[in-house]
Length: 137
Image (cartoon, rainbow, N blue to C red; front, top):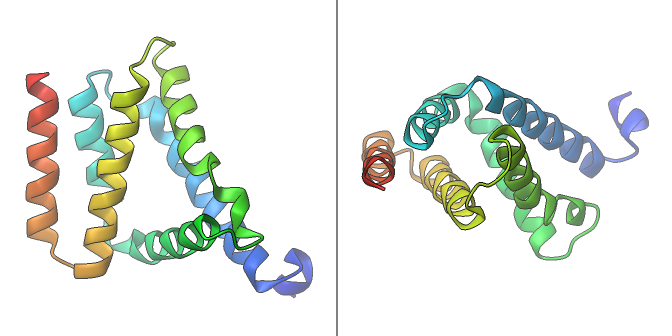
């Protein structure tokens, strides 16, 4: 029944990824104003074990899109541009796009490391180090 509604397994997978992304961007308004505190709060949420399946699915779909495979190409570049725009809008404009992109890249890189290795302690230590760097900025 689900495949009939979505048209294909790939479309179903994309719908799941898009919904999870929508829910995650919706939480931006609840984050602290300080960038370091915001990254810390976002990391605390994203690193939860119950999200690992969705994160693996995101990376699978994103990689397929980056390779040019339809229908996954619709994730790219929106999975980056959408976050940059949402963060800028939440901040009322004037964000440093390079810093926002860096934060997104670090977070996604740490998530990829986490789902690939399961090394929670190591990944959390790296996240804490990044947050400390943001505090010094």
